[in-house]
Image 1: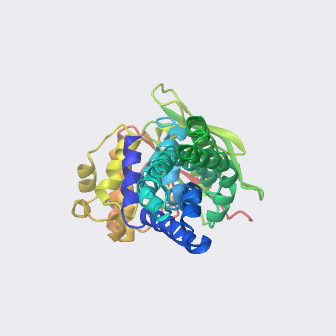
Image 2: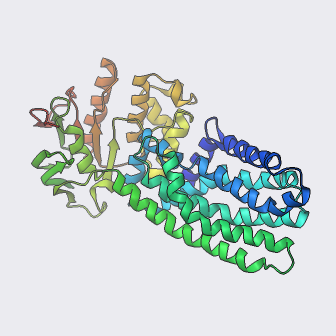
Length: 221
Length: 203
């Protein structure tokens, strides 16, 4: 299991892993927003958390379809499925999700404070948004794994995966943005939406790999 | 241990590909599945490996307590090599060794065995087609599995490597292993049973 995580991290970090692509896409989305909405600093600060979240969401959807497709193309997926007795497929998927998040999700979280500065956000808002991204982006990966597993046999399944996954990540987005606003706007709460989002992440950490494992097993026919 | 295949049939939605395949292999026995392209050899191997749900029949292991089912006891050498081009040969093989468990030969020893010790630290993508196939064959040696399910194992190999591979298969059978190999180029191993698929099925 550990060896699978290490292998996927190594693959993600080396050329062609898509780690940098996600960060660049995130940067591009955040950088064009001020041009679109105009130089109103107060407005930018107010919509900052939402824009950061939407940018991070789109950037993490970007590489999701490759989660299993690369393994399918080179035949590794068959061998991974065959080891079902030694490593249950749901655990294998969980390990792949962890590695995928560490190489694509975590870098987004790390650069988000710098991008928050571009949105004229105050320090408390930046901190809260980064915290919600840290706790919320794993859920996107776990939900996305199910979509990626369903579309694994399709040659150009990228967009389909995003469309399949989006409705399920909307609750995570809502609570994430709500918590980030809660940190800066006084009457709004921070703790409750943050804890609800954490609960969603934990829930999908179990359900996502189970569903993806079942989908992968069915797809090998 | 005994690999028993009973009344196995497969169907890919356009009519049966094969039906009522029945055989049993004991320790040290091998089966060579031959036939023209499109006859269903690969489908048979995938069905035995449990990668494809058969439309009828079963493939089970009998007289063993160590292995609960066929997939857990099997190495599947598919038509694609299951190696990552961006990783080195050594990294690829040691990953499969630690993931599959039950280490048999050391990775370096396995590379020595297939005569590719000098490629140890090269990225897998630098190798030629035949060398890639040989690294994939080395995967069979690094972890222990009693059943080898081979799908066109010798494709891309030159004559010398083919003979060498036949020797590996013979050794595995002498050590009590079971081999099922689907191939249109017969592997030169004496004493293997034969299953001939006659013609291509209409798609």
